[in-house]
Image (cartoon, rainbow, N blue to C red):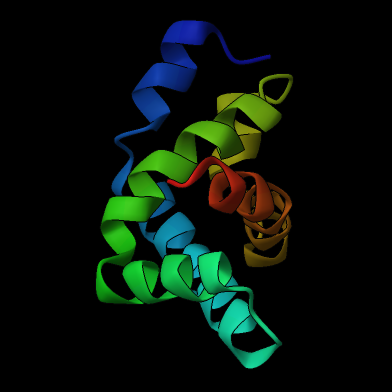
Length: 98
C-alpha cells in the first residue's frame, strides 16, 4: 500500500502524467463520438485543447482510486487499467463542471 506521501509524489511522475493525459484525451474523444450533452461536448473540447491541464486534475482521482496499491503496481499499470480509472471519473468531473 502506497503511503500518502508516495501517492502525492506520484502526481508528478512524468510517465504516469503522460499516460493519464492520453487516457483523458481518449475519454474526451469517446464523449464526442457518442451523443454528448452540452456539458460533455464542452468538457471534451477543453480536454482536446489542453489534455495535460486536465490530466493534472484527473491523476489525483486515479491515485485516490488506487490508494491500496503499491507505488510499483501503480507505475506498472497497463494502458487499459489507466483508461478504466479515467473513464470511471470522467462523468463526475463533467458533472462538477471541471
